[in-house]
Length: 394
Ligand SMILES: *Cc1c(COP(=O)(O)O)cnc(C)c1O
Image (cartoon, rainbow, N blue to C red; front, side, top):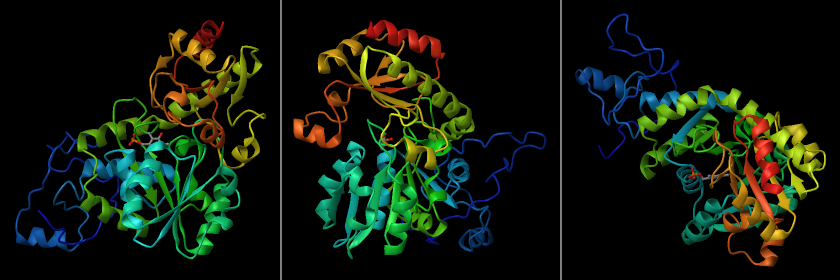
């Protein structure tokens, strides 16, 4: 199958599938894994029904698959968006969105505090196709009108950012972009839709690394996009041709993860708050960054636009890089691993991961110091987490 005969994204159906064809009395509670690349037709009349846009007819899994659509319907509902797409990774979501929306001669405004993969994709690849790129600091994003030119087509940012959890006024970005005809995009990975729903603040498109909180168990690589139906239809076409669709097995696992997202995030929020408060009260660390703390520079903004402050906590160890390394080498419950958003608490040192190899000036511009420690707080008992922090810092 080399062409899409209809060129249309299949509309969402009610819960998408009910185990059609299963023996009577064996209707599954959950959406089965449609482990198939293609779908059978009964007749030419049946094929004509597909061509006519019948939502119950499928042709090829790179275009649409009931297991994948189930995850998409759940995600759209969570984000308060009309429609959503799931993709094979967060990077596939970013690539599909940027290459699907931008053309040669256009300009992209991107937050310089974005995920490293986003910045490398933009700097190393998108720029080769004649797209102009303008990097914006968090302070500049607070006055978004000054960033847009007649050629700007897309503005891309994150809130909260890695690792210091700075926030961007999303309603302001949204209304400024809307007035200028610019597509606003927010990477909502750190917050999750439980804590922040950018579409409800007027943002056009939400991107996720579903590898993190959405799946939540550190065992699936996936990405997602959510937004208005017209925009998602267009990006469905881009996904279909760029090929970054999610596998049905992974889509099933993602759907299962999404079922517990609200209860997981509630516990992530609560554990992270307790950890942040404990660290701030401790004389063993120099500074704590958590948007739920009144000491955080964006606390008031976070209170306005978020319904929870998330599971990420950052702190500055005493003794700079040596102090951070000492902590890193001593933790025992918290695991030394990159990534975030899973059941297990993880620790990484920004100067060895997201900010690796940066000069002192670049680190200062990113607001990152050599003594910084990033924690993704998991679902363990908070007393066990505090005990591990105490022994590792002590
Ligand atoms: C991990 C991550 C990505 C990239 O997602 P992958 O699933 O690893 O491709 C993008 N943005 C943020 C904020 C991330 O944490």
